[in-house]
Structure formats: structure tokens, C-alpha cells
Image 1: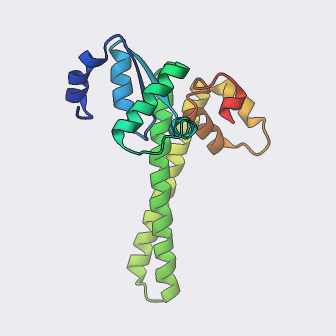
Image 2: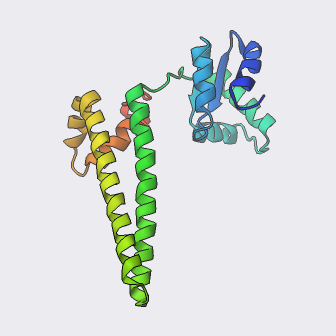
Length: 196
């Protein structure tokens, strides 16, 4: 089945009244997991490292899609993994902003390095130098704006949790945002050992 709504719809009759289990594969699992969840079927999303360790324990070394699917099915039968819930809108918004922020920072870093190389060579024209500096400043402003948006979302939706995290020495705004968004507000875990 294709990894799109048409493929999901064609697949659905084959998984009715079952427990669908899949690995968290970057952004690729999300649409399918959400589709299955919205269809009222049970779905679990499991960390790929857990599946890999399970396969190693079973001494399964073959690496094909079919073999991987069988390993995941065996894992699901033996462990009955926790059901997946889609992230809240606020968590998804924070995740999207964090991803966009990371891209902005990478592009700003690349541009800043380029400017430094031009200046070090002593060959850059004043007009180009000024244009690059303005572009770096534009990135700086966009980065600040997005960081403020993330901070506002956290204050609005996770103020107490953020306060608790902030009380830990060495944890700042960036770490708080990443911890809250990557753990779905710590809903993905039943205890602190799982977080660790």
C-alpha cells in the first residue's frame, strides 16, 4: 500500500479489529498512525531501538521489510505495547516551530561562515558584505521571533511543567522546549526511568 491517504484507505479493511504496531520512523509514521487512530483502531508506535534490541534478543539478523514486519508483530504479541495518542495541537505546533528554528539556525550559521570566509580572504566588496550582514541580521530577528513564539506556547500550555524543569540546574529555555515537545509533555512515559 502506498504511504498516503489512498493507500491507508485501501489498507484499512485488512487491519480492522486488530492492534497495529509500527516503529517511529522520523516523520514517516505520523500520518499513518494518525489515520489508524482516527479510524478507531488500536495503534502503537514503538521506538526503533526497542525493536532492534528485541530482534537481537531473538537472534534475528535478516534485514528486510518482511522480516522487520514479522519481528514487530512478534514484539506486539509478546508485549502488548502502550496505545499511541496523537500529540496535542500545542505540542505539534511547538515541534513544528522547533524544526523550523533549527533550519533557520543552520542557514544563519552557513551564511555567517560564508561572510567570515569572504572577509578573511580580503576580497569581498562592500555592497556584498553589507547585504550578507543584513541577511544574517534578518535571520537573527526571525530566530528571536520564533523562540518567543515557542516560549509563549509553553507558558500558555505547560507553565507548571516548565517551572519544574527550570528549577533543575543547567536547564534553560531551549532544553525545556525540546524536553516538553519531544516527550509530548511527558505523556509518552509512565515513569522517570523510561524518560532516562
